[in-house]
Length: 178
Image (tube, rainbow, N blue to C red; front, side, top):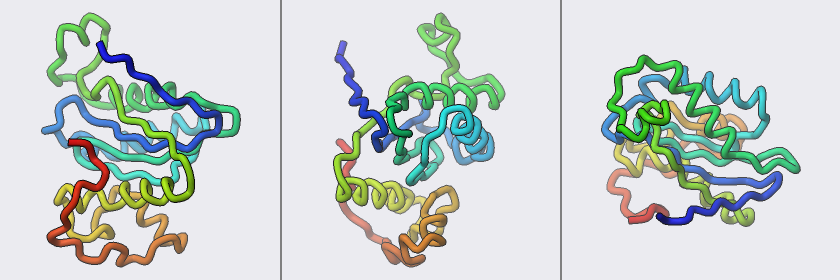
């Protein structure tokens, strides 16, 4: 089995990709209020800042900064995933291994995490988060996707509303692995 290693940096800033187990489902956008509530409750109990986030039908990307001295993003993701799952009616397919552990079949067990190294890395990952709905063909303009921190960042003056323009025909890998 592959040995997964997480990079825990106290007070660090991290980029995450978190996926549904069944990528054909659209549970995240269909239940976005339940997801928001799960994030809010977790943040109240275990503070962290969401620097950027985009919620797509089957996965999400986020950039978080943890409080100084804190390294436990794993616990926060566990709480968010558990809280969201409890808000949904059961009925999804559950593998034997998940059933034996009393798990639901909503989320992939693992997630992608990247420790942000510097300001340039931070900016690239924030841009990646916000361009993602365009990359996946859900919209042609970043500003048209409602489930994104892009709108907050426009209000705060970090982005112009027409950032990335009309991205019809957008080409490239945008940092994703093949």
